[in-house]
Length: 385
Image (cartoon, one colour):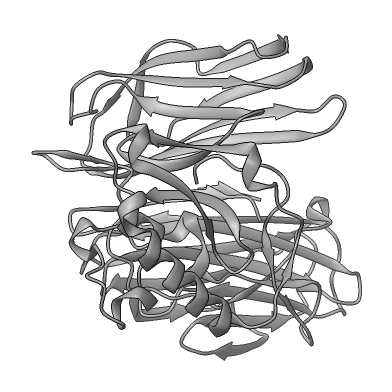
């Protein structure tokens, strides 16, 4: 139940504004996003003209040593990232094609390449900030049912007060030893290390995230993530399944959540070819009637067969391949629920998005869940809009 990739720093996100939709709407485009890359060593590019259009960072960033890695521009906004040096020319071809394909976008200012260094972390090249950095990594491969040591190290280029750090463990990854939360002050260039012993008790796909937040002075957020696909026989670090899904769905920026209570419930964990349900529940905490409330539940494309759809009684419904909508005038405290019964038809990952608008009151609310389905297992992680 959820209520309203790798390290990132505030700034440098791709923003594409869609006009003509109620509220402020933003587009999610996975084609150029490092956090939604097509991860498979079987797709290492061969150099022909067709393949460079479909490659992602995870196809070209496998490494053994720091010296394997170089810094490159990634995505339509040219954010700094890192790949194996052997694939530099191929990656540049991909970038040139991607920028022409996407056309004009609006980009927030990005940190310059000079502020990063290439590092090999968890067998993958990453662009790590020289001044403000955070690295989350396993010392040993976390095999099923076996304890493994996980470290989260971070430091800043200047004195910081009011620092709050945390390692976020998903369901299925058990804390054996250590404290995942730390708060305090951190002097300039002093490294702080959180160290845990964790154990994965169920096969599946997991994402572990480490975050560092500084609320005093200049607000700063630094984070790193590690993806795991755990099978009974082996664990693959920072791996995601081949992504056959696509997503071009807009979502409303959250606002006035104190006027709406919302949640997304997924039961059970999704598995390839296995039926599961997604339920989006919204309860207005204010009187809506006679105003109109629009509730949407949106899916990635090429991901699921829709076996069944259940809407609330009354109101109007609209439906497409990707979005399921209910419009009505509920009273305060009345639960509105859209329930989908789905079967994953291909491996991949993308957002399931629940959003609600009350246009007359300028109220919006969004819940995001990052759903992924691999060959062996699937799972989901709550995301902030």
